[in-house]
Image (cartoon, rainbow, N blue to C red; front, side, top):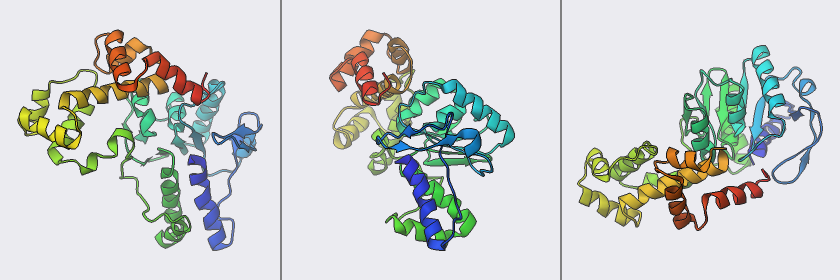
Length: 305
């Protein structure tokens, strides 16, 4: 989806203006076919040949991607960063740029499912929750349909907003989102509809996973009494603030299990649990399976075992 969302706006623009304003090539270390997540093989060129004369290099990767030969990719990206400072990523391609040391001075973004693991691995990088980030010579995108918004932005810069709007219309894409808009994935998608003081309480919880803070303190910071906070959570979330906070912490733990290589005990500590057994008990209570079962099953699905 990320790859198609990035390429299709360019194809559509070429058709609308009746000339090849954009050309694209798929690159890989050897030039062999690469199979996308949809199971369709993609023909590639060896990346030195593919990038000859290219204006942009987009590194596109899917959720849970673990490359068998990551070192070769990183070496190439570092060399490319010396030759041409402009580098872009889509979805978890951001992780490859970070591992290559090419995001040390830039804001970046990554798909929301991978963000917790990314922040654990790169705590000093400024990773936002934006759909895409443009910071000087780095453009990073969270993936999925956000890649279409990113490409429409590039089209707008070169051909004007009206032309970008015409391309968007071809895909029934009613609203072209800009780089200031946040991702609305997973637990974040419903927050916009909650009362402001409840959103403040949840934001505080999300910023204090490793060292959880007491609910009375959360209520005070949100401008509510504990009783008022409990009523709001019961009304809008169906659970107590304590239970909601616990669910957030366990959900973050699950993301770390799936998208990082941290041990269960380190995942537990990152989510504010004092032991692996305590975390495991809550994980099983909420997801119906142990942390190791979740990790194994999800990685099997994505072909990472």
